[in-house]
Length: 333
Ligand code: PEP
Ligand code: MN
Image (cartoon, rainbow, N blue to C red; front, top):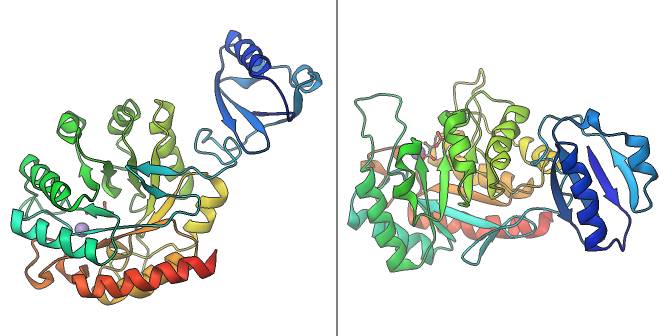
């Protein structure tokens, strides 16, 4: 349920109303927009007499929210959420490019890629340290050593970094990481999501391989329910009957998520298609669909990459994509 307040209500009136909601056991979420203040109510709203609420002088309207996701819902927070990572903004008209290798492999590799993607226009450096691999015999990542190397690359280039967490017990290793990634396979690892809800770190949450948008937003809700509202949603392709591509990029998820939620939406064209030649067309479509950013795998030597070389761009190919997607994003707004 949301309570839309009339323009010009005072802070004291808002506080009094919130206290009244609290006495009925409800949590409140206040959204102060340009024109209106909205109070979202979370909990058993049957305890509220809606007619009484509507009759209050400061209340303009009371609306019920049928969707199970509340904090993530645009009805709770009509303005776009903007995530600010040391001055790099994502969402609300700010487009960000995240680029880097699937996995951190060595100091030379990550520093070289970081410098090259920065020169090509990347805003944030990616690199997997803990890798969720289908086979236990494949390269599993450099783990804590990988995070240390990413931090070195951050120091050298000044780029904020993003890397994936697989286990809440590793959280202390992520203290200096700028964005924590939750991979597709962990989208419904609810214990992990709850732990991340107790941090203030920006979280990039990837859509599960076979999850619908409601389930995706409910996973964001798990993190937000704990108090962390810094979420970036990432569409990375879903499993369909198609076999020519690694996954199927659900491009309609971008405008649909924007309609349903205020959270920024980025697209990962690398894991969507699984082939480097598909990255450019998928990136351009994502920018045209209004994505708030892209996460693209880039490797200095894709043929010899320890993970996902087939879908990785060279830094030169990345530059071409980076230049063009920004133009498409601008004309599509
Ligand atoms: C990744 O980004 O490195 C990754 C493993 O992606 P996903 O979780 O989308 O498969
Ligand atoms: Mn990968």
